[in-house]
Amino acid sequence: MHNLDIFNESKRYMPGGVNSPVRAFTGFNINPPVIKSGKGAYIYDEEGKKYIDFVLAWGPMILGHSDEEVVEEAIKTLREAQAFGAPTYLELELAKLICDTYGIDMIRMVNSGTEATMSAIKLARGYTNRDKVVKFSGCYHGHFDGFLVAAGSGVMTENIPGSAGVPKDSIKNTIIANYNDIDSVKEIFEKLGEDIACVIVEPVAGNMGVVPATREFLEFLREVTKKYGSLLIFDEVMTGFRVALGGAKEVYGIEPDLVTFAKIIGGGLPCGAYGGKKEIMEMLSPIGPVYQAGTMSGNPVVMSMGVATLRKLINNKYYYEQLELLSSYMQREIELILNNRGISFVINRCASMMTVFFTEDTTIKNYEDAKRCNVDFYRRYAEHMITNGIYISPSQFEAMFLSVKHTKEDIDRFLDVLRRF
Ligand code: PMP
Image 1: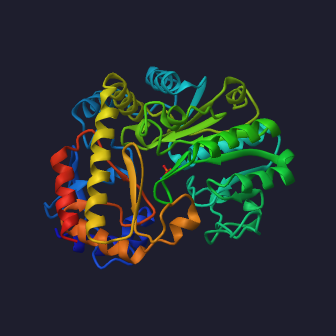
Image 2: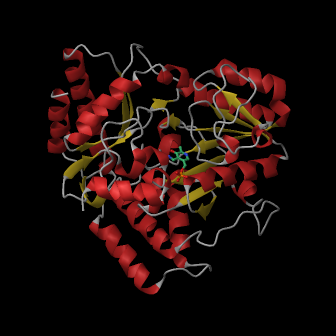
Image 3: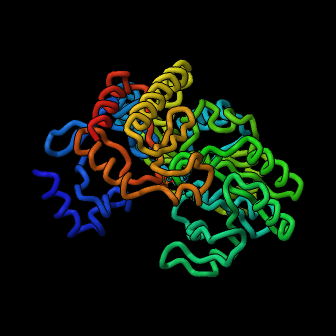
């Protein structure tokens, strides 16, 4: 069946033909390829066309698609353990791997990044007995009502829901600050510090395109939250086990109170988790008063994929060096090509996640900067790349990822296609 026929029929049964909006290629002159299979760094559509995949399911597939060892583990588990809704040894294995590698006391498994951040916020509120949450414009923490807030211009402007169906009441405790802007946070804490339960931040933002926080900014967040008795939450859904084994926490050497994970820890199956200090985590039911539960939480098949993925990453530490070498090569070569063509751009990169911003600006350090990009130019670039077998995000405001299966030849192929744009 042709991609287009499938996609058109999908539109009759699923809104926009998709189960998550960005997949629909809204505003594009090409239709999204309908993906049938994946192996290593490559994915194949229903017409048998091959793409080098730089989306990697939006981050999780750091080992590449259908890694033999990971898949074997999952199949073995599936044969004997599908779902019990009871304690399993596999949960303990994954919990230990994450806690020991990242450096936290305790963890709770959930089923998505959204669930992880939503639950972490509830826990922070329960622990501090406070309601307000500071979030940064341009950071995405999932589709939970309290986070769907338009980035009002400037600090503390009246919040306007960023989606229909979000009651004004459910965002009244969400305060928006500017990313990488210490003063905007300082101002908020001076006014409301005693009411702030937590600050949640992507330490390397990936959802306005890649925008790493400055060290001073994260240090300030650590300091100010400590001073006012608020919790600092690192949302490492994208960066966890991606930018380093120890995530952004390791890269910056800054310790959050709570951390959220998803993507890589599930090895490509639906998964999420949040964790932190024992004293905070033991506020969770059944020990403490903060209620959070899940029928499928800690599902054995998911856990076995996570365990196999993390074991492989831990046992092959050179993977991260390999990813860094390949990513820096890719960045340098893209810069050369675009410079030669006289195209204005900024590349932001942290390890194996990067974004090419088409902009007249010389730096992209927050949402306001990112919004000034030429999204129409990006769309034409993405259309060209995807049509020519290079699968990248259809949106300017996403990251491009590498896996350990990508080779220099794959990157050179990317560069060849770019040269023809
Ligand atoms: N936090 C961050 C940093 C994310 O990148 C995402 C998803 N891209 C989420 C939370 C939400 O995760 P999920 O889509 O699994 O709900």
